[in-house]
Length: 125
Ligand code: 5GP
Image (tube, rainbow, N blue to C red):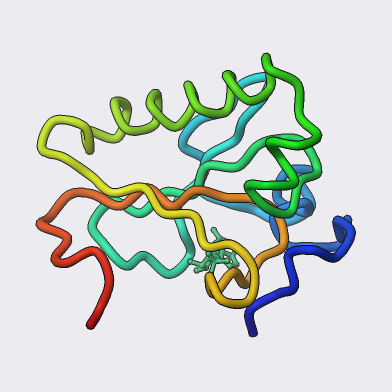
């Protein structure tokens, strides 16, 4: 079920548990500001989730509350993951689902990085 992204951050969400090491994941990358791991239900040969370490629900929440260094760190981490996974060589897609209409299911901001194959049209018609 898509979540209401205007709700306060829920410390019990699955990505918060992954960040705290309470739930295992297949880690790809981590640094001071960001953490990246393979999606449990991949929709492309490369499907990695990149998340900020901070407690942010949505893109708007993140950009209102996070500091410049944190925002820059997160954006750089997405690029790093694109290079590390090999996705950048042939092109890839970034996607952030936000809130109910965006179809967001996990209430911790995340960017999907898809690659490894032609990805088709941007949205189904
Ligand atoms: P959303 O729809 O919120 O943009 O995407 C949430 C993503 O998180 C989905 O692609 C789903 O497969 C992934 N996901 C949900 N729970 C887990 C989990 O426990 N571990 C991992 N690695 N991915 C998860």
